[in-house]
Amino acid sequence: MTSMMKFVVVITAAVALTACASRPMNQIANVQPSGTAFDNALAQDYTALSQAEKAQGDHRDADTYAQRAMAAAQGQSSAPDQVELRQPFLKDKYVSELSEARQRLVSALDQTGRTKAPEDAARAQSSYDCWLEQASEDLQPEDINACRQAFTDAIARVEAALVAVVEEPEPVPAAAPPENYLVFFDLDKADVTPEGMSIVESAAADANETPFKRIIAFGHADTSGTDQYNIDLSQRRAEAVKSALSELGVQADTIETEALGETQPLVPTDDGIREPQNRRVEIVIER
Image 1 (cartoon, one colour):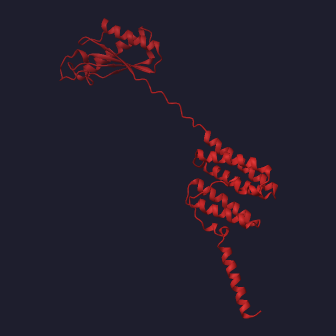
Image 2: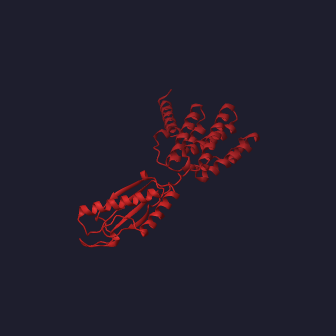
Image 3: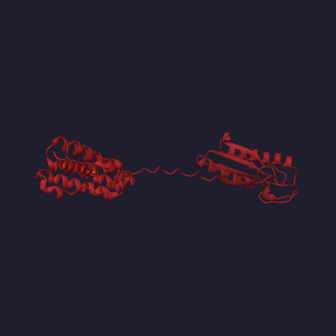
C-alpha cells in the first residue's frame, strides 16, 4: 500500500468515526433534562428505546428515539407517531387497533394527562410509539406484545388519574355559640325573684330540650360592697340559680358556678355605686 493510499484510509476511518460519534444515538448521554416532569420522563423512556434499538443494530430507529429524547429533555416533546406515517409498512391487522389506541392516547394527553400523571403519560406515549414501530417491522411478536401491553397498562393509569375524584373532608360543624340567660337580683339579696325564676325556667327548658356539654352560672355583684363581700354575695347568687335549675330537672353535676363579684359589671360604674343590672347571674349553656 502506497503512502497516499494509507493516508486516504486513515482519513476515511477518521471521518467515519466522527460521523458515528455525531449520531443522535451516541449523543443522548450528554443531554441534561430541563423540561416538565412529563418531558423529563418522556426523555428517559425514549432514551431507553434508543439504547435498545442500538443494541439490536437498528441504528435508524435508535437515532429517531434519541432525537425525540433530546427534544423532550429540552421541553420540546414530540407528539405520538401518526399511524399514517408507517401505514405503508403496516399490515392491515394492526391499523385499526393502533389508530384507536392513538386516539385514546391523544385524548388523555389533551385532558391534562401530562400534568396529572406525567410519568404514566410519558410511558403511554413511548410505549405506543414502540408498539407502532415494532408492528410496522412485524419481525418480533414478543416485542410487539410487550410494547402493546405497556401502553395498555400506562394509558389505563392515566385515564384513572383523570377521573379520580378527590374526596374533600366533610366540614366540621362549628360549635354552637353558648346561649346566655340573665337573672337579676335585688340589692344585697341572693334569692331568685319571681321575674328571675321565669328566666331560670326558660334556661332549664332549653337545657332539657337539647343536649349540652355543661352549664355555668356566673355570679355578679355591683360595687356597693367590699370586694370580698361582693365575691361571697355573687357566689350565693350563683348557687341559688344552680339550685333552681336542679329543681327544674337539670342534672346538678352538669352545672358549675363561678363567683366574679364586681369584676365584670354589665354597666361600668365607680366604686360604691348601686347598679341593678350589675346584680345578676349569667347562665351560660355550652353545647
